[in-house]
Image (cartoon, rainbow, N blue to C red; front, side):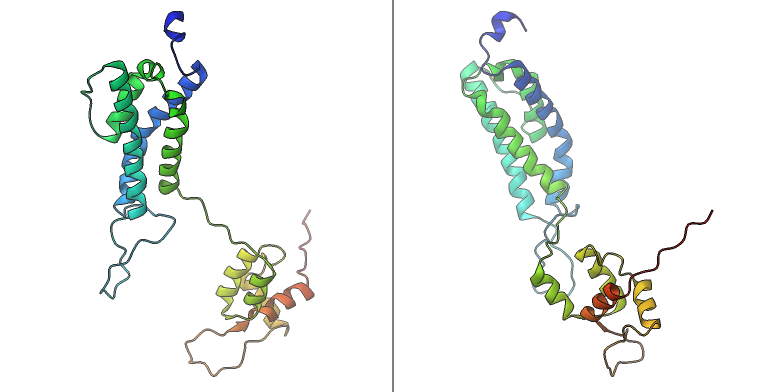
Length: 226
């Protein structure tokens, strides 16, 4: 790119390089995004279930992922169209999302010389980040407050359920494991709630009793061996 070319650019060179990298990553996202649309990937939210069926089989199509896919495609179409109109170019590349991204990257200078391109990096990045959130949704964080702890204390769960809940509650309950509950029971600090239970049913404990016993009777620290 010559100095004369750079004088007609609506994007600074650093922004242009960032846009090139952004466009280069899109072809790699396309297949994963399509997998998400067709239910071949694990999404953050459950898919719609098939009505009238007793099985728990998810519907093999995600409306949310399809909207994100279509938005990404429409975003690229819009910028390709603007470049072609302003720069008097005829588009002869592929019409797929990956093809559009590849064409824009190959014609990056023409894109940078297109009036209004200043919003392209933000526009395209927003569509790409939405696709990335569908492909790799962020882990859901369990917010622990006084109300959630109080509700948990009233629950009656088996030892495995209490251990799983304790991990979500965090400190100082993270060490309430199945073994820890058994230790508290063997020491007479906790007892299962009254039955009657079927012979093969797991015993249930009041969560609050277990949490209180855990705090009242600290775990012994193992001595380090020399």
